[in-house]
View (tube, helix red, strand yellow):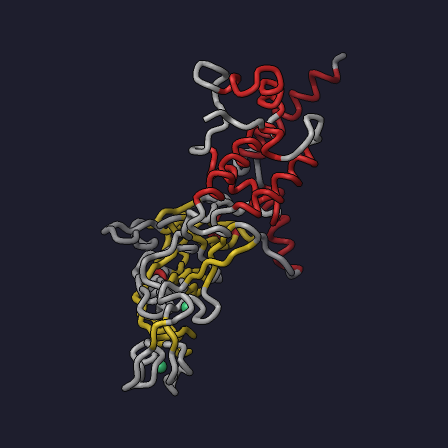
Amino acid sequence: MSKRDYYEVLQVAKTATEGEMKVAFRKLAMTFHPDRNPGDKEAEIKFKEINEAYQCLSDGQKRAAYDRFGHAAFSQGGAPGGPGFGNEFGDFMSDIFDNFFGDGRGGGPQTRGGRSAAPGRERGADLRFSLEITLEEAFAGKAETIRIPTSITCETCAGTGAKPGSKPRTCQTCAGYGRVRAAQGFFAIERTCPNCHGRGEIVEDPCASCAGAGRVNRERTLSINVPAGVDDGLRIRLTGEGESGLRGGPAGDLYVFLSIKQHAFFQRDGADLFCRVPISMVTAALAGEVTVPVIDGTQTQVRIPAGTQTAKQFRIKGKGMPVLRAREVGDLYIQVFVETPQNLTKRQRELLQEFDQSASDDNHPESAGFFSKVKDFFGGAART
Ligand SMILES: [Zn+2]
Ligand SMILES: [Zn+2]
């Protein structure tokens, strides 16, 4: 069978612009589209012919080759990538789609939406719940009862939405499929059935408890076991504790996001705890003991040796946080700072002045060392 001239097929002049060709193609494609001519073999052949011609002439390179060599340009042994109907059909359809609707939704009438076989079945939504606990609770673990507003499967109708004793009827618009195909111009698109809203069935006698929805809003009470050692930002997933699914679909999950309140005097770093403790100038100089808090609610004594400086850290083993799901416990670090006395009486002032007069470099080796280094530094500069 000899091929008709592509320009003749599209009914355009050899000098036709791209735009003119597109208009001609759309008009012809509309007329001969298989969806508009079901069972019409001739229309189908025409449609393919139109498509092939347009595929060629709308491509600058192919058009140039065609203008020079005619159909020979694309016959066997000719230029590769001739305008076939096979692989390019999908692209072609999505092109059309884009042209008409300007969105990126591809897919021609041969594609069905990627839906599950069971119509209307939907997985319930995941729920997020924020739970704030104290550091002490994170230390010991906590059994917490939370109340979450959610929707649960209606007990009266067991989720069908139909009044007990009645049965939902298969939707006639979509034959229970939940989706319908509608002709838009010369091709079909698939969308949710407007009659049953994707359920595939119609509830004629709706359940009174849920008004046919199959689930009801309810506040649900859940017990959560917060394990000892949890950290800020931890997410606990409770499978199947989210919203009920629709029409027998699986339930979503519940995610509990943990946050831990800032503590008045403990800072946490992993399993270790840090606590800044003030000590008096006299304790720092003469040695002594300070009482420090422990996260378990007890107290412990820390020995401060004579000559302790600010920022000195003391480690108390095993008094930190437990490690989640491990038999380990962190440590407690006590960092002291020397509190300079304030609001001195006349007598206290005299005593300190007396002390100062008797003090030597031996009492303040840090100061002595530092200032001799400073002297060296400036001494070198002064000589020049
Ligand atoms: Zn119900
Ligand atoms: Zn329907």
